[in-house]
Amino acid sequence: MNSDVLPGARKLAFVGLLFVIAPLPILESGYYIGVLSRIVLFALFALALNIVFGHNDQLFLFMGGLGGFGAYTTALIADSVGVSPWIGLPVAALLCGIIGFSVSWISARQRFTVILISILTLNLQLVFEEVFIGARGFTGGSTGFPYELFSLSSIADAAGVSTGVVIYYITLAFLLAGMVMYLWLIESSRYGVAFEAIREDETAAESIGINVVRYKAIAGFVAGVLIAVAGTMLAREASYITPSVFTFLAVDFIALIALIVGGIRRTYGPIVGAVIVELIEAALGTYASSWRTAIFGLLLIVLFLYFRSGVIVAVEEFLEKRDISMGGGNSGDQARAEG
Image 1 (tube, rainbow, N blue to C red):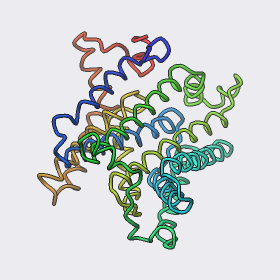
Image 2 (tube, helix red, strand yellow):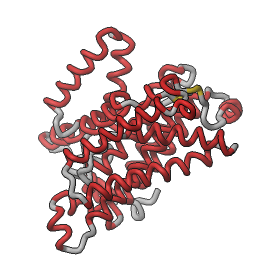
Image 3 (cartoon, rainbow, N blue to C red):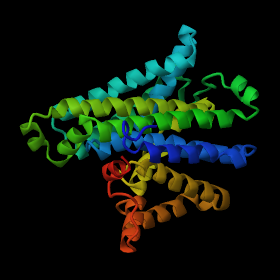
Image 4 (tube, rainbow, N blue to C red):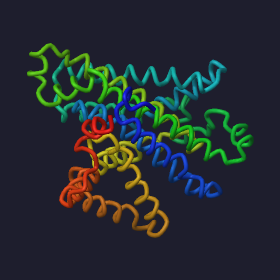
């Protein structure tokens, strides 16, 4: 990737390379491949949240429901129309994008605060969960249905790896594509400038001609598309589409913590946060499963107490005290430093 065209491209290429080679030593272990897949999946969820919440102060708390809608829609389109899920996925992503757009458009028109948006979307999350269970004729109710979206076994056989490894790399491709879009959106286009102006002061932004409603709605659309893709790949990784996969605690809670722990509005905050949160979850699941929830909660309290602005900021401050530069403060500075 050319850093003149896309600021931060070199660093993204390096991060992408690390994730590409990460599974190589553990290809035979389905468990560790699963952990890596969840890291990438929740980095994608957190990336969507970083755009809509980090840069636009719109706290979406229905990512589980929206991701589930994407997964169910992809599977149901494939079954009812008889087409490949690869065709159903773009349709589902578009529908989720429209839902995200509508929520943001209405919220911006009504001048909802962050708290009101979080209440609105949390209610939508409950609606989605009820629909997933209630519309049992389509969704299978609370038990859901087994569904292996996308035909990946032939690819896995040809490559000589497990299907889990193929799922990991496909999800990674989606994450890297999302990161490229994020860098362009925030660092290279007028959207990043508008988002920053709106986040600082909406009234002042409107006074200089920025259409606040339109820019917030666009952020909601982009987040909705990313959430649909992440939800669909989450269902594929589980090989089962069931409402329990898409609850608030299963998706929103983890994604929100990952973003805050990694660093909100930081380019790599979602990835760093997802790595930390998922590794903690995996370690507790292995060595202290009966105490997993309690210990996980205590560890998160410690992280919030000592890394309130995110691990990336804490590391930067640590290095600055020792006169070691990382190439800039916020994500924009980092990218411009590379450019």
